[in-house]
Image 1 (tube, rainbow, N blue to C red):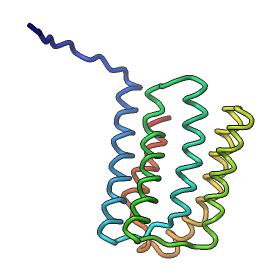
Image 2: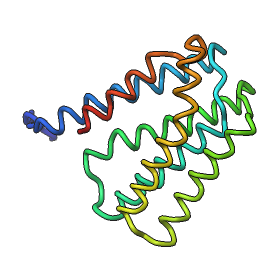
Image 3: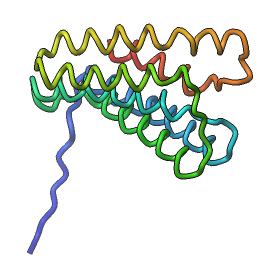
Image 4: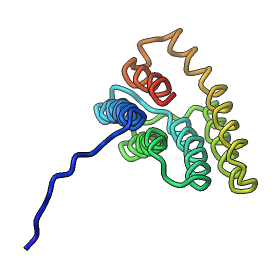
Length: 166
C-alpha cells in the first residue's frame, strides 16, 4: 500500500522572486501569442526567431557552465515564448518579413555560433545582452512613434522581469 505524506516546500526569497518573474514572463508571452491567434498583432518572424536565438545562446551557455538553476527559469520561458511566437505566426500565416529584421536573426545566429566556438559564458552573455539592447532600439522607436502598433502588457511585464531577476 502506498502512503502519501505532505511535506511543506520551503522556498527562499530568491526562488519566490524567480517564480514571480517566470509567471510574469509567461503571461506576457501567452498574451502576445493569443493576440497573434486573434490577428491583433503581426509578429516579425525574423525578430522573434533572432531573439529566441540570442536568449537561447545565453541560456545554453549558462546551463552548460553551471547546470540548472532556478534563475534560468525566466530565460528559458523567454526562449520558448519567442520561438513559439515566431512559429505561431508562421503556422497561422500571420507574420511580417521586414528586410531590416534580418539583423536580429543574424545576431542571434552569430551569438549561438560564438558560444559553440568559444564556449566562453561571460563573452557570450555580454554579446547577447549588447546585441539585444542595440537591436531593441528600433522597437523602442516604433513604440514611441506609433504606440498603437505595440501592446503595452507584454513589454511592460517583460521589462519588470529584469527587475525581479535582479
